[in-house]
Length: 350
Image (cartoon, rainbow, N blue to C red; front, side):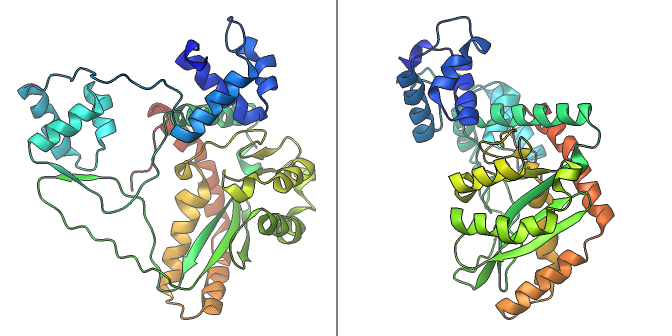
C-alpha cells in the first residue's frame, strides 16, 4: 500500500520515476532514499497514477478537520499584509502567518475582501516546488563546477503570435474590498503563427515556424531539418546543451531518441539528463525574457497579414543584441537562487 510510505519517500519515488521512467529501476535505487524495504512495482505505479490524476501524493484528508481559530489579531495581521501587498496570494499569506489557506480566505471574506483575477498564472501542484528546487540545485552545481556551463545551454521554447495581439503577462490575484476593474482584452480566433526559437549566450537560433499544431512529428522534423543544420557544426566541438520544457510534443519517443543521439547526456527536459520542472516558465529565458520582449517589438509594428507577422518576427529577432542574450542567459542563476529562497514557489513578480 502506498500509504505506508512517508511523504518524503513518496516524493522521492515520483522524482525518480519521472527521471528513469521505470518502476523496477526505482526499486533498484531505493536504498538511496530509505533504509526500509523497497515498495513493489505495483505500489510505485499506483502512486504515479495517483499523482498524475490528482497532482498529490498525500493521502486524502479525513473530513471534519478542525478550523484555525480566527481572532481579531489575526484579521488585523491579514488586513495589514494585504494592504501592503494586494497582489499577495492566499498561499503566500498562509506561509507567512502560519495559518491554513482556508482560514486566510474565510477571514478575508469576513472583512469583505475578494480575489479579483485580471489574468491567469501557472498554478503549482503539490510536488512542483520540490522538483523546482531540485532543478535549481542541479543547475547551480553545474555552474559552480564549470563556469562556462551557462554559456553552453541553448534554451528553447515555442510561442503563439497573433495578428493584432498583445503581450500576455502573468498576473496574480488582486485582493481588494472593491473591484479594481483591471481589464485584460483578449481577442479570440485571430490568425496567428506558432514560433520556435532558441536563445543562448551567443545569440538567437531561429525563428522557425510551424504550419498547424505542434505534435511529436512536426517538432522532430523541425529539430532535424531546421534546428540541427544551424548548430551541428559546433554542438559537439563546444559541448553544447539543449533545453526544452515538458510539452507533450517534446515527450514523444522520436524526439527523446533524437536528443539522446545528438545531445548525449547533455539535454534538459522531461526524461533528460537534467529533469525540467513542470509549470516553470519563470525559470527559462524564452519565457521570462524573449517572448515578452519580442512581442512588444513585433506588435508595435501592427502587422496586417501572417507574412508581415513572420517578417516582423524575423526582423526583430535579428535585432536582439548578442550582449543582451548573454546577459539574460547569465541571469538564470539569480532566478534559481530566488526560487530556492522562496521554497520552490514562482519567482515572477510582473
